[in-house]
Length: 290
Image (cartoon, rainbow, N blue to C red; front, side):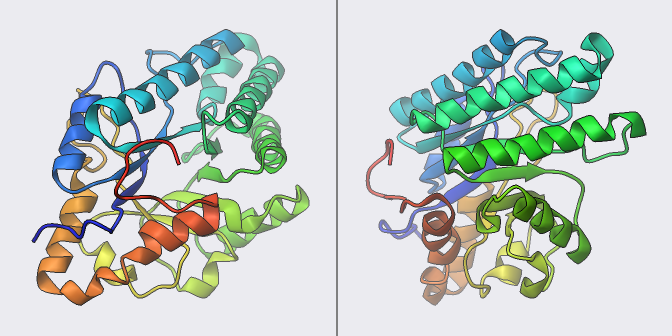
């Protein structure tokens, strides 16, 4: 069935790249019924930046892609900017650990200014590598994560966390970190969350669920805030990874075909959650900036 005209259909976390499908992927999302994308920056070159100018160029590319998506695909697209936490590992080898940390600090501060000036809506991805890394880098990784929350706090925006899969103790640990930096835990979003926990175990953080098959039905009755995402990578070497950009509108369409009454519950992730975390309500009838 056609999706309701007054229902925004939001992919909370995806990537697009000039070397990939780019706007064509957004057109496919729109054709399936999608209306809003949160576009997270990524490295557009083989190696991560080794200078602030490199990150400034990367962020400008992301913002430019978001503008093209709105102009050419009629999809509202919000930019999410930050140096990728895994970058620190390669940068430490090239620049030294302290210099790499300082570069990440500077890039985070630039991302914060992008938010303050209205070109982005959140800092992300921030956090730590999702795999084991050298113990001697832990203090630098932790310092960058802490600084990311401080910058997001001062910019008044959400922070989108990249890290390993978390259990209840892991969510509580992130909540404690947020508290120690005076960052509002209700604006801390765990991206790429694959295995739903009982709602009481999130310690106030917001899960962004990977929209794998069956997840929507599993979490649909949960109260806001929570999100759905594809983490689409737009990598020609891995077509459709992590999930294709049209996945969420297709999941929604399948659900509504089976149960049209679930439309009101879909406003939880697509309207109430965005308003609770970001402070604005997505308008499904008008592409463009909020």
